[in-house]
Length: 349
Image (cartoon, rainbow, N blue to C red; front, side, top):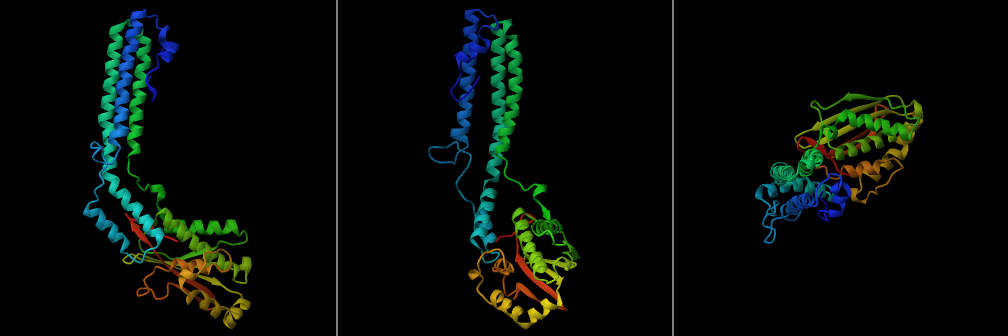
């Protein structure tokens, strides 16, 4: 009936030309009605693509997306970047966040345009075509029956197209509570290290629920994976490491998440750490410029943890990464900066 190539008389004849038993004169009138219908549908399609879904300019005056950035958008962007020292990743992610917030009202307007004006126009064209076919001959009834079905499907397709312009929203499925992140980290560690006992006790949690966006989930689970792996592999106890105690707190004012894990150590490992190993680790990971620490897997994993703390305000948290022997247990504590986006918290490597 309609394609980018327009109406096809050959296709019409193949499916309907002689099946309806029309006279040559009536058949020509039916074909003409369809050609007019197709032409008008193509016009509205071209209008949407070439004129409406366009950035407003001198040659696209009907465009529905302006290029003017208002002061509110600029202030939002500046505020988002002023939270703390930024990385390239946080700059890009913040830019995309502001980009979509700027587009929100215009996308909604485009969706309404398709859902209301375009649907109404398309239905009106179907009604006109149906009325024309009824006037031509009673023998077009079979064709009308199919046309009614196609009209209904087309209305549904208009709703689908309108949804294309729905601003991206964070669904409930994209919200991850902190305990979920901890559970995922335990599972990930067990999947990699089958002998890891995965006994993690949540000793303390933030007073209010903390919900992570996908990027926040990725960073927190990755961080905990390293901590669990470190506690298990370097305990000297192997599968007998026992229960790991996890303490979590969240400073909502400064958007800082602190995670602390306590785990058992063998007597041999305690003596080794006290002898020189602990001071060597502290010198290597707590005294260097974080930008110089390699992004690498393996070893103790402390390099990765140290890098996660590089944007923490040291006037608030002088030691964003700490590890030591506390009451003959291995203690590791890290503070991670988070970024709030409409009630959810993101984090960046």
